[in-house]
Image 1: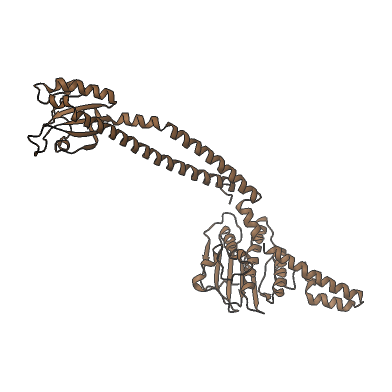
Image 2: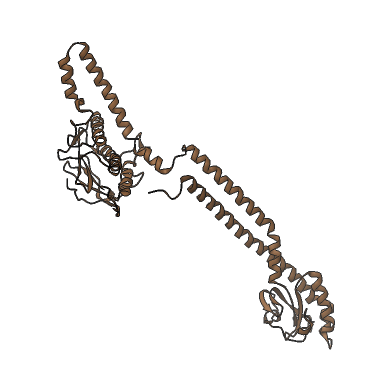
Length: 443
């Protein structure tokens, strides 16, 4: 299946998303803090203006006049214009206005509840009045006390406010530099993300994830070929020595005992396997297993014809990855001087690969976990960094072909790994499965 995005695009998109999320979050927090500071600054200003109006002697004395608004209204308007607030409203103890930016509202009761300031408390908050929704402060206006022992009575209120629309306008004006800084940070972040993406791609030699996986699927076949080359060189040296000594019959007998007479077809190892790639792999794996003291046998029931179509060739190529990793895993798990048995078979609909070993097997509670990349039941050692790869690659190939892999217990007493890969057919499809049961696959 063709990948939706290249690694470069994925890295860039992920980093850009991270940068934008961080920038947007920072901007949201900064705006919230800026609004809070702006409101607190307005509260301080409005509280100071309201307290000044409430304590102004001219305002206080005007409460005893026949027409208090005649004195209070001009003073309130001067203070409003000087302080830059939306309104300064003074009321009596009943909430009747003595001042208002709209003179037509003078003499009318306020449209909001004046009970808090009339009780002697300062009130701060947002309310909707005759001028609109505003952020306001209300303070009590105290009269003269009857004597020094009596508290001063509340004779009215002083209310100062600013429209929310004006507050938002001030906030927007102050945020211009902040938004510019955030935009610049986002641009720098995106450029840095592109640079990091390019650097990472260069460090991995411009490889895509599929390319890296392909290299991993082939870190085992290379080792096997190297081992075969080493043993073949030793064998050639022996044959050369026998020929120089004139012992031709002994040289021929040595070749037959070594099994190299069938090197091209691997008939000595797997006579029923006529697929060249898989037969060669079995021969190489038999040699490397023998070097580690393990005997690799191919079941006599194994039978596999060479591929005749491009799709079949592709299937056999992927089967190389599966079989190679299963054999490596089995050889690692096999007992000292142990055995590994391989069965390959195709019924035309499925290609079946089965590998048994005489090791300790896979515990039932771990049979699902062994397919996870990085998971390994092996003892840590010098190659600990390469553990937990083989079965993960097997699972990947099985998933790609909508196949099935089964972990069970084999005839040798250890683990039995059985893989079924559907033979390609037009319109075929299905759902991949990874089964960790004790079921066996028929040969």
